[in-house]
Image 1 (tube, one colour):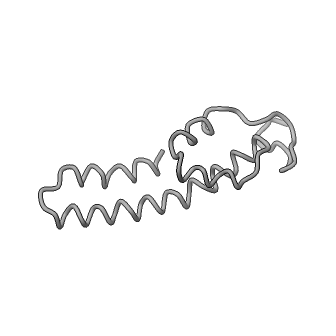
Image 2: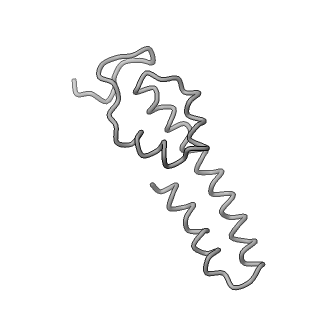
Length: 93
C-alpha cells in the first residue's frame, strides 16, 4: 500500500498546484514514483503468482491492471502444499 500512497502524493500536489511550473515538477515526480513502484510491485506479483502455481510472466500484467490485480493477489490465499515452484513456505510446520 505504501507504493500506492507514494504515487498518490504527487497527484495531490498536482491538484493543488497553482502554476504550470509546479505542475510540471510534480508530474515528473509522479512518473518517477510510478516507475519505482512498478519495480517493487512486479516481483511481488510474481511471488504471489508462484503461490498459485502460475508463471511469473503474468506479473507484467500488474503494470496494466495495477489495483485490479493487486487486490486479489493480496487477499486470496495461495494453493495448499507444494507446487512446481517449490514448497509452501508460508504454512505452519
